[in-house]
Figure (cartoon, rainbow, N blue to C red):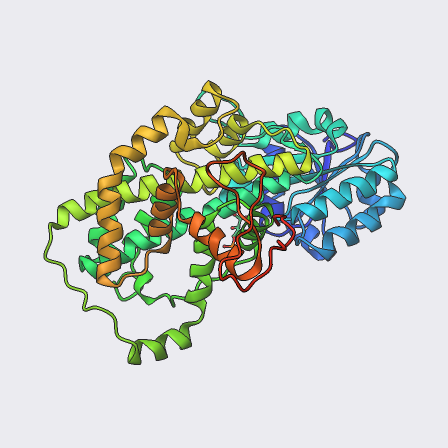
Length: 484
Ligand code: 6PG
């Protein structure tokens, strides 16, 4: 083993351990540290035995074991624990040393920590790491941002341990300054929420409208995974549907229908509201989890509030085909909205995001990995300034081709009383996006009527505001015109 380690890692939970083993397998020597030191010992005696991994019994020992500039990766719970470890490390580090936070941190915290450590002469990286336990071990998607001076020092190691796409490109590249990496990971998670919700809506339509069994749905997902929808989440859904409990019944049927969430989807929705971006699909996915978690309320309501009887006498095969189109088209909308939000955030926070590069980082290793991300990469390669994915020829044409089936699915869900908020809101966004004249003329009239909020006119220049005394009883004084 080398005298000094290439990198140290703090936090021996599932992601931390697997990342260490991944680094070691790529030829790096790693020092492992954990707040409760017994965990370090059991790791060294277990999975780390005989490998180029050394343990540290204290922060001092960890720091002293590292090559300079020291690189220390924190894989601890996002929030206070990250600040606590940073404070413990600071007195032992020297200018130019690098701390990397690999948790699901909220990006404003990464902005703050990057600035704080810069004042102390230290370099901070906040990086999203996606791929779960298996990805951490075999190659996750890694989205680093923070202090750009740190990147050349960690580039090799982070790219070496990351997933690779078919041509060998790593699913890891520099995202941008401050919290940019964690922002992009947050969007990844929001998109993950959207993809999962879409799949769940298709599942419920198949189950409750078509009366399909788990095995039958397994077959459909297996087929979908061979085509345009080919993705990790479709693949695991296929496998989940085939999985049987001890009594031979599908395990999925026995799982309580209340979704958990750790907050990254909610953060995505909040930023979208703050920046005024119509991120409808991901927001609906978050709210769907909220509705699901109010199980008692739903059970009570189901006994008294009646909807339509669910009966289907249409063409079952056609509806399954339509569902595939609805999923694919809605997915395009979700990514279009997510990319819109990244563009707006880049403007707001002064980041220079490489949108094609982000698609490439998500192409392998992460939870939303799919062949579809290759098409997004191509779209941004063709036009790095692409304003909306729906304006790219491939995506425009794909959505146009899918829209008849998509509309039939939305109509079926609505008439049969099956909630499909992601599929239907995606369609409403699509229709809003492609409508030159929306009814907001009437809305502006209403605002002006009751609050003298003023309006612009189609027969005058933009920026000229008018007020009408609609009732003859109001005055001519308009309220100030500003937009939040
Ligand atoms: C990933 C996942 C990972 C985690 C989510 C789960 O990219 O590997 O996104 O970060 O599984 O945080 O999020 P919820 O608990 O909110 O579903």
